[in-house]
Image 1 (cartoon, rainbow, N blue to C red):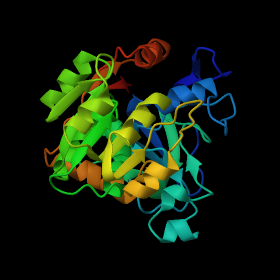
Image 2: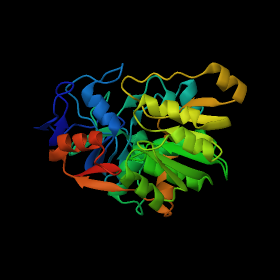
Image 3: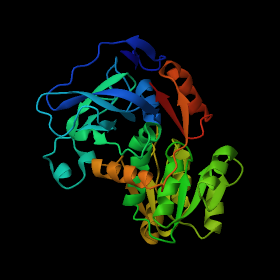
Length: 336
């Protein structure tokens, strides 16, 4: 099978012919139809984070395809069923986090495309229990970004407890941000979109943003504070400066939700200000299988729009370069 492989950190991915993997007990083999390119895949390929994957490996955690083979003991999935392979490849199911609805915090979790080979290949295996079914009303092109960008931002809005008529500032309008602003609107929020590119802000307007701020030509903190400040700020840009701006854009009692993971990110929070103004800083990491099912249901009902750019796996290195340069409006999706 064709696969894009990280052979060493920082080097171009190699398009390689690998054996089709065999599904182990409790796993399914999925023939991939689409796979989204997430910024996390780029971080993985560059070895940016403290806990690194081990080369060689196949990235990809926004995979969608059909089940082609069942491993021993699998009864919950069926051959021909279309499923998603998300970041949460599996979790233990027995720890305090798993049994309390926070399986994404499980210390024994396996992450697709990071600790195990992922979806940048014609075939991939995944634990059957974590292969989330994709509704017929959701195309494979749309389901791929929803499997990470969608479920990640849905969870961020959910943990922020956005209430109707609250102001939500979304910092970074791209693969994640264009969906975050839609979930904020679904929750009833008024959305301020912040980015450094006019074309992405135009896209935000088309998707329903109430206000837009170009942080390259205006101070987003001053602009948002002039509107009364944000009740919620969602930090989606991989830039420590944008995290600081997001915090300072909050009004009293505001909540900062940290999602992006800058390679060398350190955020300084003024304790005096945070305490006296009752602000909250929240870390939000992807979403659960139930969250992903909700994301698919909302999209099937026509509540969200996914903006994608179609690429082939052979073009993976060019696609990564385009994402880093900001030349991609929202999400790259590889079609097989």
